[in-house]
Image (cartoon, rainbow, N blue to C red):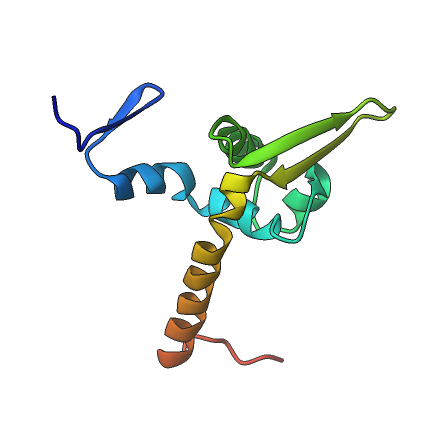
Length: 119
């Protein structure tokens, strides 16, 4: 038996980095987590805060984050329905990593003169 393999849902991963990237690796999952760092948000405001995020991709990404227990969904019994998303404890533990990636991206863009001049 190989102890290095991670079995999660219907997949196997040969290393922990591949597993972590499966959980948060796509662009929108990481951005959703980033935008939830300051607290719960309604689905509409969360979706609007992320540029070029289609409704379909939002639904796919938020459901995957819920399934992986990184985001919690709360439905309030009111009319019209109110749904809020917030980070779980596991989701919150990713914020320092995501902030480091953000900082790295800023420094890389600055060092390589990639920022467009403001008008």
